[in-house]
Length: 110
Image (cartoon, rainbow, N blue to C red):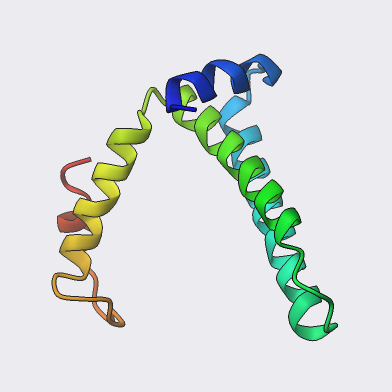
C-alpha cells in the first residue's frame, strides 16, 4: 500500500476537532509508551517479546504521525528529506554524542 492509499484509508477513522495537532501529539506519546511497556515486560519481567503487539503499536504510531503530517500540510517525503538533511548536518561522518549543537544551522532549511 502506498502512502496516498494509506492516508485515504486512515483518514476515514479520524474524528476531527479543533485540537487535532494536540490530539495527534498525545497519541504519538501514548503509543510510544505502549512500545516501551512491551519492552519493559520483556526485559524486566522476562516475558516473551510480543512482536505482534510491537507491530500493531508501530501501526498506531504511523496513524497518528500521518494525521499530524496531514494537519500540518507537511508531506511524509518532505519530513524524511528534512530529517536526513538535519542528521547529515548534526552527524556529518557517523553518529557520535553531540555536546554542542547548532540548531539554527541544522534546521535552517525547514
